[in-house]
Length: 271
Image 1: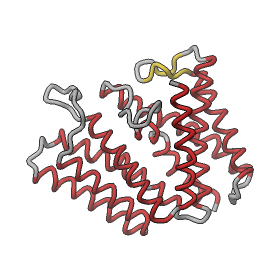
Image 2 (image 1 turned 90 degrees about the vertical axis):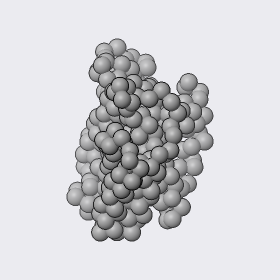
Image 3 (image 1 turned 30 degrees about the horizontal axis):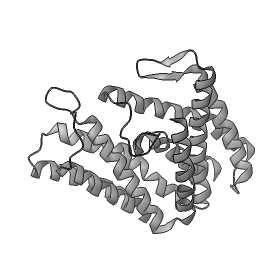
């Protein structure tokens, strides 16, 4: 498993960094595609049968799923255009889901709630990947947010494997330990301090330390929250699309919250 994770990371990380540095339309399209796949994983994961159990079948496209994909594309385009357009795109995406569910005579709440959840949880939060990229020094801020989140997760994983003994939330995520969480918090702080030295960002040492205290904690909480969702759906991973890492949502769970955090940190604290 570890070898598979490292191989995937060795291939995927350079590609992701290249797209972030490239920016523009290509970056927005890649973000939209990744968010759409993660949203489809979410809808399939929380889709319930009449018995209340997750369906034991492969994902099949329906009107609500198609509406979610279209809605997320709209939200990403809006985010890349401006604040008013982004807000309007969110409203339009929600309306699109309503229309799709109604027109298809769907299962009502069973189709509508997962679709709306995917739009808001993944589409809206994920669109900050574009919003943050579009501000001055946006590429560096994206790299800071994403790499710091990866660093937090990596320190949590290896610290937990090495010395993890005390379970943190066994009913939600049996693998998470207090020792791993401590490693995540310390490792995330160190990662941000190092990135602040490497990247040309208008951030003081005090700002870096403050962000280093906040971001790892948010990352850990977001990861635990997604584990709660997966536990409720009775799945270990949202899919197997990324070898060794599960699905796209499994890789985005913390980033969906840390990227908006960095954006508001920049405009409220740094600038």
